[in-house]
Structure formats: structure tokens, C-alpha cells
Length: 58
Picture 1 (spheres, rainbow, N blue to C red):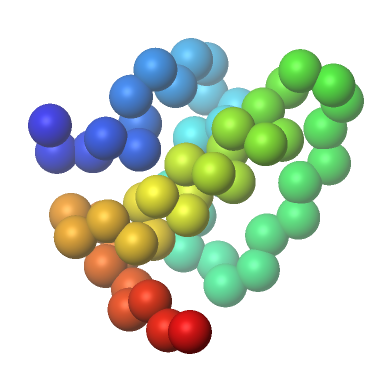
Picture 2 (picture 1 turned 60 degrees about the vertical axis):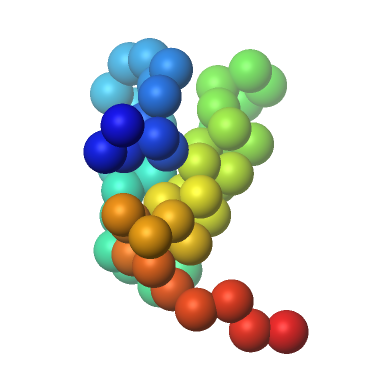
């Protein structure tokens, strides 16, 4: 699977949050709209070898 961070993503609203190259993002959303799901998948994309592959530093 090339992009595991996009597995089970439904709709188009959360895609820009997950795939954005912006260094800082802000999430304003109501309950149940993906304000936790999206950032978790973004971190997965940033750290995944097939994604941005950013180094993990302590």
C-alpha cells in the first residue's frame, strides 16, 4: 500500500489537512468531524518512509 495514511479516509474535507506541506496547521471543527483523526494521519504521513520521512528527534 503506497499511502497507508489515506486508508479509510472518507470525504474530501480532511484530505488537505492530512496531505498539506504547511509547517503549521490549525483545525477548527465541530464534534465528530475528524479534528483528531486528521492530525493523527498527518503525523503518520510526516513520519512514514513513503511520506515526508521526517527524522524523529527526542
